[in-house]
Length: 139
Image 1: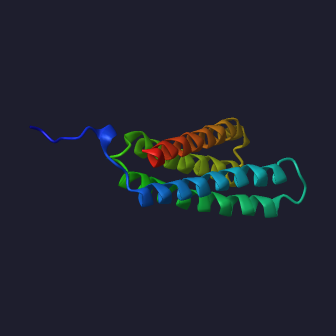
Image 2: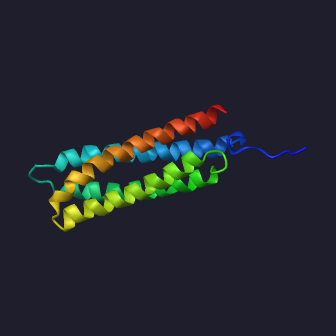
Image 3: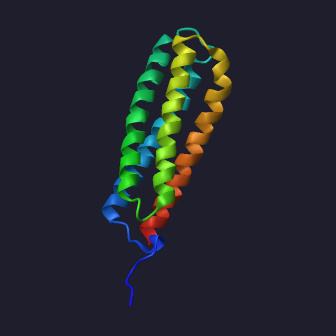
């Protein structure tokens, strides 16, 4: 008699899921704050301070997204969607940060047409990951 388990039957540690959920929530909060801070400097005078806040926020969001991805890797046996989604979120956030740097430091304002939709995609992926984490908690 075989006792192998299917990947969907693997039980996730409640503590690991909780840590993932907290980190993902903090990442999403950071992404939301990034949108608020961007709104404070777009087409405004005295924007330099808000650009600086936005840049610092981007660094914090990258670190949070990395921590979220590491937490998701710990849950890889319980949910590959969570792991691949969190890794994708991290990659998108790194790309987003690079675009932001190019816009700000390289004066490449034409990249804003990619920067904003990617931000929406990042937020949507983070919300999706919240749902996957919630499903893991209910198992």
